[in-house]
Length: 428
Image (spheres, rainbow, N blue to C red):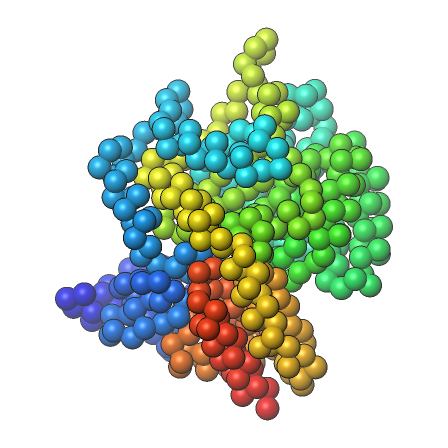
C-alpha cells in the first residue's frame, strides 16, 4: 500500500465499521489489513496476525487459497453476472445440485442470496407463504431459542432478539415465541417441557421453529447436546411444525461434521447456509428447502409464486468460488481436521476448568470458548493475545478460538496454549 496514512485518515472520515464502538477506534486505532495468506492477515505496517476467528467465522480455508483464487479468475473471464429471475446459468445450477446432495435426502430446491441474514429472511418468508399455499394462513408464528442470533435484518431479529444489539428496533419486530435452551444435561427435561407447552398452547398458529444447531454463536458459543436437538426435531415432526436449521456459522465442517445437525441424525425442513459456503471469499448464502414445501409454490391453478429475490443471488463468480470450496472441503477432509483440532483444544484448555475467574470451557469441533467472570477480563485476554498478533473478538465475557479448519495441528496447539496463558494472566 503506497500511502498507509492516507487510508487511515479516509477510514476515520468516511468508513462506518460494523459492531465497532467509536471509543475503540479513538483509543486503539484499527489495524489496516492489506493482505491475507493461509491462516494469516498482514497489516499496512507489515505485521502478521493469526486469523484466530476465521474472519467472522467464514474463512474455513484461510486466505489466498490458489484454487479458489483461480476459480474466481476463471469465472470472471466467462460470465460475471446474470440474474436468476427467468434466466439461469451453469454455476448456480451446479451449486444448487451440490448443496442438495449434501442434505440427508437430495429432494431439495435452493434459493440463493448474498448473506446469512438474507438466507434466514427467505426461510421465514418461505415458511409463511407455504402455510398460505397449503390453506393454513393462521399458522404465521415462529418459535426460536433463547439468546438466538440469526442476523440483523428485521425478520431475523424478530427470531433472534438480543437486547444489547437490537433494543432500538424492538417496536417494529413481529411477535415470536422464545423457548429455553439447556446448556447442561440437568436442564434438558425442564427446557423441553416448557418448549412442548408452547407448542401445545399455540399449535394452531405455530409455523416453524428456527435453531442454531448445537452452538449459539453470538450468545457466546453456548452449546447444547445433539440429543436435545433430536428431541426438538421429533417435537416439530409430531406437531407439524417446520424445523429451520441455521447452519450459517456452524456449517461446512466446523463442528466435525459437514453440518452441525448431522450430529443429531435429523433432517431439517429448511437449512440456511452462508459464511463458509464460499470459504469466505465472496458473499453468497443459500436457503435449502425440501421439495414438499417447494412444490406448493406452483402458479397453477392459482399463482403461488415466491416473489422474492436479490440482485446478486447466485452470482456466477461467487457460485464458482463456492463450488471450488466444496471440492476442497471434501478433498482436504476438513471435517476430520476439525475433529482433530477439537482434541487439541480440549487437551490444552482442560486445565483451566475450575480456575478462579473462569466460569466454563466449551469445545465443539474447531471451536474453543472460555467464559470468564466479566467482559473486562475477556477484554484483557484479547489485548494479551493481540500483543502476540493473534486476532480474537470476545463476545461479552467469552473469548473464543474459531480458526480456519486447515490450521496446522501445531499452530492450533500454540493458539490454545496462548489463550490459556492469557486467561491465567488476566485472572490472577
